[in-house]
Each structure stands twice: as C-alpha cells, then as structure tokens.
Length: 208
Length: 203
Image (tube, rainbow over the protein chains, first blue to last red):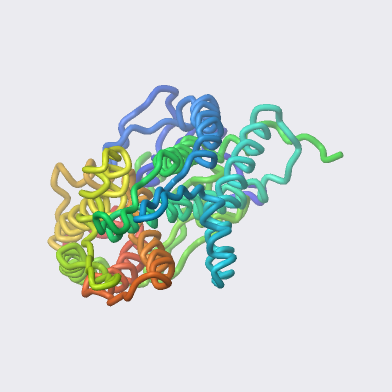
C-alpha cells in the first residue's frame, strides 16, 4: 500500500457490502463470489433515496409533535399529552433527570439527526468543503443514536397495556405516537440509504 | 491466481479506501487509515461461545415474553401486562400500525435475529456453509438495526417511574428477564455476523 490511500473503485475494484469480499468492479449489480449477495460499487440512487426519506420524515415531524401521543381518561377528566407535554410533566413532578433524557431522545436526537443527514447530503450534492473525517464521524453518530428515539413509542405502548381500569382510568395511544414512530423509522431508513463513501468521491476543494 | 489477490484486500465500508486485509486476533479491530472508521474486527468470543449466549438468550426471551412485566395496584384494582398484552391492547384500541411497530421491534425482529444466529452459528460450528447460509446471513444484517430490546428496556424503566406516583408497583418476572436479555443481546449483537465468513469452512 502507498501512503495515500486509493479508493477501491478508482483501482477498478469494488467490495461486497454484505461480507466485504473485494472483486473486479462492474457497473451493474454483480453476485458476490463468496456470499452470493448483489454487489454494486456504491449504494444505488443513494442521494435521491436519502432526500426522499428525509423530506418525508421532516414533513411528518410536525404532526408527530403537534398531535397527542397519549390520551388519559379518568372518572373526572380526559387529558391529552404531546411529546413536549411528557417532558414538562417529568420536569415538574420531580424527575428532572428523566425530563432531560426524554427531551434528548425525543426532541434533540431527531432534530439533530435530520439536520446532520441533510448537511451530509448537501455536502455530497454541492461539494461543500467540510472535513471529510468529521463527516464520517457525524454519520457514525446518527447511525448509533437514531434508534433510541423510539423510547417514547415504547413508553406509550406500555402505559396503554398497563392502565386499563375500565371506568377508573384508561390510557390510549394518540395519533402523534404512530407519526413519531414512523418519523424515527424513516430517518433510520434515510441514514441506511446514505452512502458515506460518496463524501470521499468528489474532488477535494480547498478550505476557505 | 486473481482470486487470492482479491482475498488479501479489503475496502473501508465508509470511505472505500483500499487496504491490505489485516490479520486479526480475537478481540482486535483495525481502523481505516483515511476516515478512522472500524475497517475490520474480530470478536473477543469464538463462534461457539457466542452460540452459548444465543441459546441462553432464546430461553430468557421466552421467559421475558411469557410473564407480566409489572403488577400494578390502584385503589384495590390490580392489573398487569405482558409485552404481548400491551401489543394486543394497542391493536384492539384501533392503533394497529403502532401495534405492528412495537411487536416487530421488540418481539419479531429480535426473535428472528436470535433464531437466525442459532442456525448460522450451528452451521459454522459443524464447519459447513449450506445454500441458505449466505441469504440468511444477509437477512440478519438487514433486520438487525430494527431489533430494539435495549430501547424497550429503557422504556420500561421510564414507564415505571411515570406510574410510581399514582400506583403501587410490583416488578414482575419478565422485568428481570428483559434486563438480562438486554445484557445478552448487547453481547450477541456486538458479534457482527459477517465475521462468520472468515471462519474456516472445513477442518
């Protein structure tokens, strides 16, 4: 190996995305000689798929936050909680730690994740001169934290299963919960469609 | 011998930089010189040891799903639910998509993952790679991100804190089983199945 690494693709090779086997580059999908999976030099239509999934997630993010995720009916009253309502509840009921946890995974993580993925996609699309190593690091971060946003969906599911005292108190899931679950799933799919190798493919532009 | 040259190379999955395939001992990992991502790793445990963990996890999974997670008492009334009870409640309330989402991420995908790992590791321990080996391994890699036992476990803790103000709570057997399952799954999921291709396929 030389000191300056070359891409497999520029060396006329490609690696299987399933098992890592290196083989001669072909433009269409070719079967991997080791594991039999379809191999392409890059993920197909990576940018357009990422954008489509990301934009859908951003649109759905509005109802996910505005609609109630949970509805509690007791003898005297019915109350509806949104995601931010849950955070406020924990903050005031003496569990600031849980309030911060839920704020982080339900609000901070999805927003940061969509913003970072958008920046990465724009970087590839317009050749922005961002540090490539840091871009890959950001990609690893959003890959790792994305799943934790599903926390609120599981909390609602458990509350619905547990609090079913007919006539006394019943908790039902609100439409915001499924919208939020779908947002999390869409951002995970968008991250999965994004090919970080594209960050390294464009010719490097000089920094400022 | 074109094939053998190819076998000595590997490309970084995150930046495509070409490297000579590094020889790794168990517990070691190699980093990409260009982007710093993990290039290749070999798990600390041998496949047979992971197999033991998978067998244990299947049994714990059964317990976690068969018993109530928590018992709840409010003013003489008492209730409790299994994970499947919560899914069924969502379904009967007309929240079918959410029931499917919860069932898939906490039950179906983790169970499929464990069952597939069982089959793959058994095949490797017998030093065989039948025709289904490749497709099944690829399927595990695809569905793995969607199993969320550890996130669910955190959800259980949050729910209990939320309910502790208004009800008397008795942790059920499944709560401990889920805690144990979270630990076992963390160990099993850190074993990336594509390493199985580097194990010998004959004696």
